Image (tube, one colour):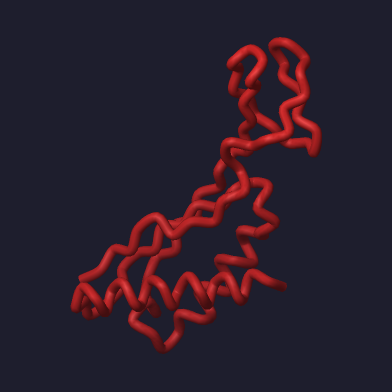
Length: 113
């Protein structure tokens, strides 16, 4: 379960950010997870909450937003939801192999006091 490693790295970054800001406590972590990132959101949430115990993020809320996978067609300029390996443009039928979003894992913000 690679979510444990990802959660640990995310918490390390959040604690380092909070420490740099001379915060006493982390109140909320906001995280974005792409649908095709390979991250199981509930496993990540569980790992974050478990690993946060005993840290300045122990009472933090974990807000995790799942980002829809989207592709962009260079042939016709259409942006569309993409959930398959070969992304076919619904407008012109062209194959669009590149995603513009959906594989990210991003710590968006750290709310501190």
